[in-house]
Length: 155
Image (cartoon, rainbow, N blue to C red):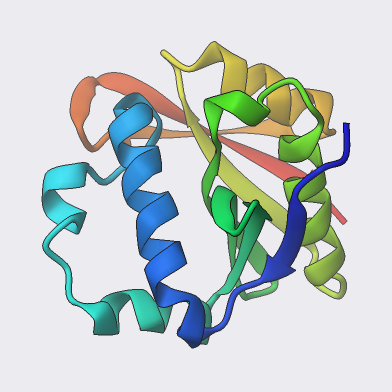
């Protein structure tokens, strides 16, 4: 299978950034610290700021976004909003998205990600890519009875 085209989004891609983020929040609400109700009403300016401030990578298939991964710049890059459309799961696209962020993060010391305890697939995925649990945890914002685990990939 040929993977969808991955590239860094620009502020002009705001509608695609919004579309894929809202689709991710709708399809996998258990995986994100935010939720659809909070983000759906946000104005275009909010979505234009994402690629202006962060490294937003999207994958497109047939001119539609099918995956997102965002790196927040810093010595320790924060990896957020990682999601692939269910039709692309198991194809290697998620790994390609993280690899793209890792290549972009060259010069940083590590990449941090968070995964919720009720998302073992995400935990296994990050660990398979070389991320290790740091021991840092926090209550999951959408359900404080659940724990989020920080994982880091040292570069």
